[in-house]
Image 1 (spheres, rainbow, N blue to C red):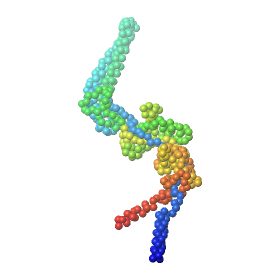
Image 2 (image 1 turned 30 degrees about the vertical axis):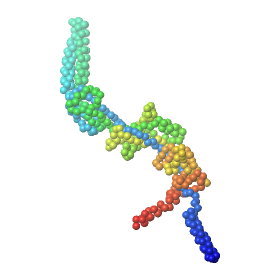
Image 3 (image 1 turned 90 degrees about the horizontal axis):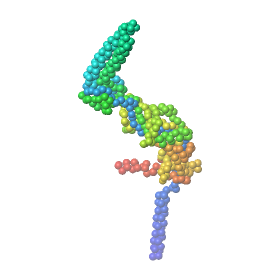
Image 4 (image 1 turned 90 degrees about the vertical axis):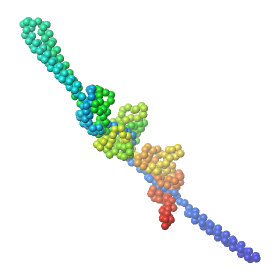
Length: 404
C-alpha cells in the first residue's frame, strides 16, 4: 500500500509540474517580445517664400446704374423695348403722347415769326430816322425811341428763339431714351399710364454689368495688422499692389473663371461695422455675375520671405486650446513646443513662433510619442505602415473565408 501511495503522489506531482510548465510557455507566447522604441514619422522644416492671401466676403455691384424717369408729363403711348434685354445708349424706350408738345412747338414758331417781323420793322424805322435826326427833321427823342424799339425787337426775337428751343426739347423728351448701355430690367408702367416729370418711381432701371464691380469688406483690425507686418519687415509687399489680382468663389462654391483687378480701398472706416470697403473689377462677358450676388474674394496681401509651413496633422492643441507640436531633438528625444500659428495655407499651418528651420516635427505616430521619450525616426509613410494594427491587414481575407 505504501508503494502504491508513493507512486500516486509522484504521478500527481509530475502532472502538476508539466501543467505549470505548459502554462508558463503560454504566458510567454501571449506576452511576446519586449517592446522597442516608438516609431514616429517626421517632417523636417525649411523656410521658403510664402505668398499670403486673404479671403473676404463681398457683393457684386454694377459699374453704372441708370434709373429711367420721364422729364415731361403725359400718357405712355408705347413701350419699345423687351424686358431683360440689352439696350444701347440713346435707344428709345418709351413714347409719351406728343400732341400737346407739338402744339407748343408750333405756337413757339409763330411767336418767333411775329417777333422777327416786329424787330425788322423797328430796325427799318431806326435806320430811316438816322439822317432825319441829323437834319433835325425829327427830334432826338423820337430817334432814341426808335433805337430802343429796334433793340427791344431783337431781344424779343432771342426770347422767342429760346421758347421755341424749349418747346422742341420738351417734344424730344416725349421720346424717353436710354442714358447708358446695359441690361434693362422690368418696366414699371404699361401703355396708357400717366407719368409726370421727374417722378419718384423710375419707369425702368438699366445696369451696366460688363465689367462688374465686387465690393468686399475688410476689418480695420486686419488692415492695421497687415500694415504693422509690412512695416516690421515680416511681410513683403505684394507686386502691383494697386492692381493686385483678385479671384472669386461664387455662392455655390464654384470658382469664377475671370481674374479681377483691385481698383481702390475706401478711405473711411464704417463706424457701425469697423470695416473698410475694397473694390475690385471683373470682366463679365457671359453675364454670369449679377448685381447683388454674394461672393468670396481672394486677395494677395503680401509675401512671407522666411515662412515655415507645418502639416496640420503635426499641430495639436493643449488643454487651454493653444497650438503645440512634438519635435524630435538631436538626441532622438521628443520635445513639446508651444507655437503660434498665423493662418492655414492649403493643408498646412503657417507658424510664426516656436519652430525654426531644421526642426523635425512628428506627423505620424503621435499617439505613441511622449515628451522626453526616445523614439525611432522614420519616413511618415513608413511610420504609418509600422504603426498599423497587425490584425487589420488580415481582416479582408478572413471575411472572404467566411463567405466561402
